[in-house]
Amino acid sequence: DGALNFNTWLLFIQYGCCFGVELTMNNASATYFKETFELTTESAAAIASIFGWMNLFARGLGGFTSDIFNRNMGMRGRLIWQTVCLLIEGVMVLVFASTNSLGLSIFILVIFSSFVQAAEGSTYGIVPYVDPPSTGSISGIVGAGGNTGAVCFGLGFRQLAKTKDAFNLMGFTILGSAALTFLISIKGHRSIFGGEDSEAVKAAWQKSG
Image (tube, rainbow, N blue to C red; front, side, top):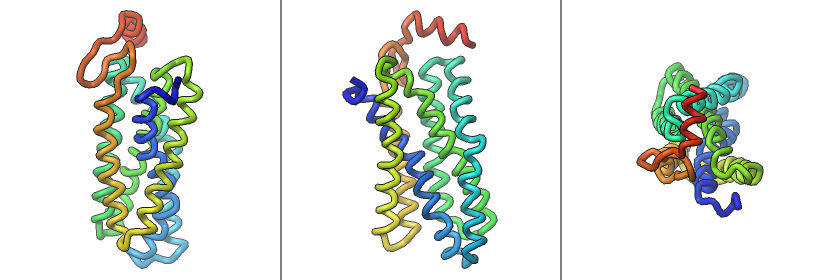
């Protein structure tokens, strides 16, 4: 049943645009810093590792913030936070690709990485609500979206002549995926644009708040 739920595939795409981006950056960022700023391999790898270090807090913080939004607005709050994470992530990719200063590029990388990880946590703040009896299969499908996204973005870096073009493609794809949140409609929960939380759901999130 999880595979037949439209929301599952929307989250599949969105997870591809956060965890897939993380996997892509793990492979591409060191080369980017080395070629763009003429750094040694060691220096470029050290800077690129900053992206992974954000995992220590940002993914959990993304899920925690999703919980806070949920306590105040229910599922609509989780969806709003998901959209915010993806929008900031997409914008940061585009800014990162256009930055010519090494120092500014590292600063943007930290912000970019933080919202990549936060979007991952936010995504899995939504997954358990899609269809509770099918949470396991939905989790697996959404998780596979991350690997699928990495393959697709990796092809962009491989096939496009300029690395900047690959980053721009990735950035605009992420921004497009943010708009998919407006299509997510979970039974018994309010969406961003409309609908109402069921009485049981409303009582649960109001009590937790």
